[in-house]
Amino acid sequence: MTDVLLEVVNLSKHFPVSSGVVMQRQVGAVKAVDGIDFCVFSGETLALVGESGCGKSTTGRLIVGLEKPSSGRIVFDGQDITQLRGDALRRVRRDLQVVFQDPYSSLNPRMTVGEIVGEPLEIHGLARGKIKEDRVCKLLTAVGLDAGYAKRYPHEFSGGQRQRIGVARALAVNPKLIICDEPVSALDVSIQAQIINLLQDLQQKFELTYIFIAHDLSVVKHISNRVAVMYLGKIVELARTAELYDNPQHPYTEALLSAIPVPDPKYTRNRIILEGDVPSPISPPPGCRFHTRCRHAHRICTEQEPALVDVGEGHFCACHLRSPAD
Image: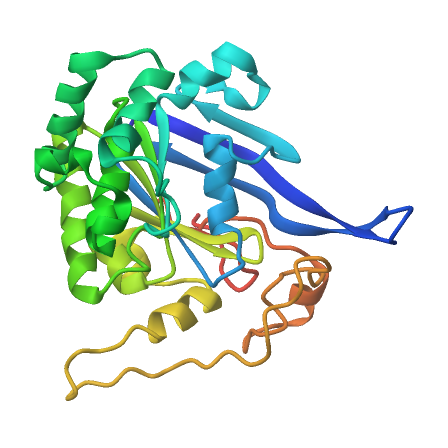
């Protein structure tokens, strides 16, 4: 994996907070994403993990164009897509698709499965009529559904089947990158494994690249090549999956990994209980944003924001307690 498909540079998204009934004025901003940098290599799966509200889903929505960034650049396949408008943006969006978290709300209940999966083909002018119908049947078969389901409606399917329909819709236009926004969190555990295996099989078959957004680190371990850990709008650690799980460098990552259940009752894991609540993204703490909950915090952590630096062999960490590799 040497070809960079996506590069995110100093990306931020601040949602304004207004006050007043008649004459509203902005009194602050929710800093959902606040200056993050990362890249995604062609053919890999990069996982974004962290607590709810850390900015994972907002990052995904920014990349596919569902939200406009407050600042920063998103470079996809060598082109800065934050500056695109109109037809130029539509052509790029064909290569950027998304699988949403909730399979019950992401499918139009008034459309048949065939219309849902075939709609992207019509929007991008790729197929109509019989050609579109044949393409829809092939897509349904590829995700493990019967081609005859094309005439049914979403309410006739289970949650796992609906998510397969969502995956088929994302595959319809032959994208290069798919944002998987917590695609299994609303499903039963047994169904989660099926969807994860399906995504891995499709990745090999169609040469796909994934950004996999999740908060379940046990799921992430099986599907990702690299993992980026987010906290309060910032990336605090980024490394290859095996390296991050075996050798976490950031105290927040250590706490997250300690919460993974151990299936064998003979073995126990020392839980790291974080004290306090996640600070408000409207007014994040100065310095390191994690210092209010960190058991290792020093004075410098309250004064200076740590940079995300390479601490060795492509393992990046934003912590004053970790020294960069020589």
